[in-house]
Structure formats: structure tokens, C-alpha cells
Length: 449
Ligand code: G6P
Ligand code: MN
Image (cartoon, rainbow, N blue to C red):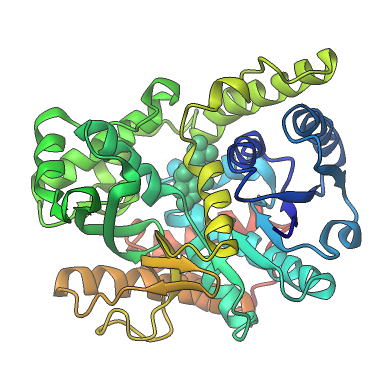
């Protein structure tokens, strides 16, 4: 079996240890020759890079592991690039969340005005990153987690319309399947055939079948269990309080409308009042992450480096038996492509007639089988007026955000924010836009009036 070269762009992210565990679990079916961690933050990268070298030496000693800030060294002759960059880091995430909250609007990294600002920052860096990767590895698969994935997907499709090897993905549908699996207790997530439609962070499971039992429809059972017992992430013991509240909102949405199983992210659009009341403008998810996961992960890197051993490490050893949606999913997707496995995944693809009554060029999130030629989507057909209305409004917002970037247009940016369900008021949209422009002086393109 040919061994492959993988680069993690955004290699100094707190998610990297989970990806390393994913690679260790899959080392027989996804054999790595060279692993490169690439990042533009040298001090963070040095820590994560030294840590990764020790982990690889301990568990996959044949892998050549290196870290670099040099683009050519990172991207030359690679087969897969896993992208998970965060332009502006957690410091800008904090602003994305706090600025809207100060005005009584949802403050979230990918939804509402925060997602808009993060989108305008990510587009530039992702377009440049893809150009650099393509200079040195024209055929590499680019598996992209970079958020807001919905907006990034639209922008990359516009910048690289003929590139068939960019796949935008999100781990939330998988996280939800893992949560259903824990709730049911007797269905492995791998046996689930999860029919899903929507945009990224804006969609619904319509039907879930259990392959292992003659495609039994288990959707009703899942709904009933959520309604009777509530809902929590599969790894609830490891989650911060805000994620537990978020999962509970699925029950609230389902009680009001049991048609489909909503993605957790719909709480920001369908239950904005309740959700805002749960958010603390002084202490947001960014603070929770900076004080929690970020500290934990980098303390673990320090410890592994000091002891020059990752055996017994909390970020590695204790994670083997667990499922980490983020780390496991990206490695499994790469593995499905490499070995032409045709497994089921919910990923982001061009609509092109999958959903009949939505624009052809929209980037939708749907069930696909994934093999060597990339994702092959299942047809969804026509969707009901309610879903069509919601999705068209959200897609128009995403498209206008991308238009604002490419055209440098203040007006398009204002229209985008006005259209976002979490805002919905022209004057408020202007106030938000001006505050976000001010806070993002170092990142936004010039938006001309
Ligand atoms: C989910 C989403 C990701 C997002 C992440 C944030 O997994 O699908 O797109 O990046 O949540 O998690 P955090 O723990 O950083 O709030
Ligand atoms: Mn996501």
C-alpha cells in the first residue's frame, strides 16, 4: 500500500491532538509516510510540533513528523491537507461573540454577525491557502474544517470553480449521530444511514435507518427518546456547560415541531430569544475555550515534552477508546477517499439539483457516499415551504457576505447582515457592521460605501 503524506494546516490548533489519535487508530488502513504540521504562529507551533513528534515516535515510529511555517516545505508533494485555520485566533472569536451580544443579538462564532465577521476574515486566508497548496501539490485532497464552513465553501467555490478536490466538512452531523447512538444504547453510529439536508450549521436529519437491522427506520425512536429524556452530547462528561445547554435546545425545538431532527445550530435562528438569554456577554464560549481546552491541551504538550514521552498522556492514551468527532471524522474521510470505501457521510457539496427547489449553485450539506472520486450525494428532491424559506434566506445572507468580500461592497455587507435572521433590522445591522469593521481593521477587505 502506498504511504501518504499529510499536512495539517492550522497545525497548532487545540484540535490537533484529536487528529493524531485518529491517525494512530487508523494507521493500518491510512498509512502515513510524512506528517507536517503547518501554522503561522511559530511559538504555538513549536509546542504542538514537538509534542506531535513525540506522539508519532511513540505510536507510529515510521512516520517522518515535522513542523514548519514555510509553505513550500508544508505543501510540497502532499496527498492530503487537513485545514483547520482560525484567522485572528480566539482573541477575534471573543470579539465576534461579544460585539453582537452587547447589542442584544446572538453572539456566536459561526452564526449571526459573529459568523459574518469570521467569514470575512476566513475567506481571504482560505483562498490564499488553497493557492499555495495548489502551487506545490496540484492533486492533493483539501479537507476543510475552517469555519464558518458555509461561507468558506461558497467563497472557495467562487474562487476555484473547477477544483474537484476541495471538500468542506463539519463534524456536527457526526456528533449528533454519536449522541443519538448513546441515547438509544443499541445502535452503532456506523450502522446509521443518516438522511440530512440543509446548509452547514443550518440543517435537519429527515430520516435515520439502521443498516444492521434491515434498514429499520429508527427516527421515531430517536425523537421519542429526546422528547422523554432530553438530549446531551455523547461525550457529555467532557463537555463544558454551554454545550450541554446547546444540546438541550434540540428537545425544545422538537417539542415545538417534531417534523425533522434539528441540528443544534438551529437554536440560534429558531430560538434566538431563549438562546440569547443563556449567553453571558461578559463570558462567552471563547472564554470557556481559552480557560478550558486551550489551557489543558497546551499544558499536556508541555508535560509530554518535559517527560519526553506520550505514553499515559491524557490527550492520547485515554482517548483511544473514545470517539472524537473532529479528529476521527477527518481521518476517516481521508481513509474513505484513499481506499474507495463508499461510506456514508454528511458533507458540503454543490446543490446542482440535489434539492430541486433550491438554487443550483448553493452549497448544501447532505448525505453522500464517499469514495476515491469524492462525495456522491443522495438526491433530496423537493423540500417543504418552511425549509425552503429558511434556507433561501440563510443562503442569500451567505452569498451576500461572499459578494461583499469579492466586490468590497459595504452595501452588500449591510444587506447580508439585515437578512440574517438573528439581526433582521436595517438600523441594527448598520450598527453591528460598523462595530465589526472597527474591530476587524486588520482583517477585513476595504468595504466601499
Ligand atoms: C462544532 C462545530 C465546529 C466548531 C466547534 C466549536 O464541532 O461543528 O464547526 O468549530 O463545534 O467547538 P468549540 O468547542 O470550540 O466551541
Ligand atoms: Mn461545524
